[in-house]
Image (cartoon, rainbow, N blue to C red; front, top):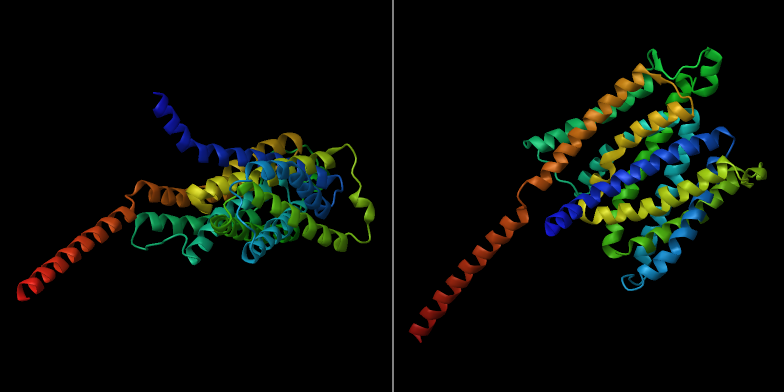
Length: 366
């Protein structure tokens, strides 16, 4: 019984890890939106977020990864620099800017494109195989198209208001009465951010093969992200130095929370799960974050929900889980490597037998 329970826990660990991540991301969306609404600069939020993450993670990395941390090489360092640009600088800044133009719920829903984008990149880089005649491959392709279509529906179709209203149109304008132009602008930023995030996931998976020290890699990403994000922030906020000031308020809470849970722990958990399940699996649970944010955003931020966004979200979820279903079948099907190894073994034995017969014939001639 104990062995069976331990085996079940081992299988459940990747699911527990990614679900924990989505709860963390949901809290970040709500807190970050509240901080941005209070005038916090997204550039400042990104920098302070990674300062906190670096301070929290580095002591653990120095101790835990001491025996497994490989030597730094130029190739590994370049990959780390690229990782710190893709996620801490490009993705997070564009994501928070897009959230400013829309809502926390909308931003979380748009990130449901992440699994599809990651899947496409994995196919291009041959980390994911697609066979058109295979049902599971067809599910992956159709699901990818459905996910993108759902995102377009969310962007372009507003529809009637369902719930979350608090009266007047003026209040709508102040909360999430964003016009179509702002929605399109925000959605483009979030989409580009998602693409950058997907590239980060794939590159992190590749980097971990040469640098299998998740905590140390996380620490390096946070440090480099702080430096690069700081340079970007100083340039973009050069006319407003007061934005760097923090007080004991929502802004400080958003920076601390997102730094600990959504940079420090998230990068580490992603790396651990990716070693066994790959980047597509890690990104497959984004809809859970959207559901949590929708509930929390309606309660704490008084965000309204519209029919178009609900329809788009449903299409995204259906498309996403078609991708997940197709991906899950990869784990259910027999491991092709076993068959390949068996064939290779048979070929080896056959070749050895032929060589043996040739040797006997040669000895008889002699």
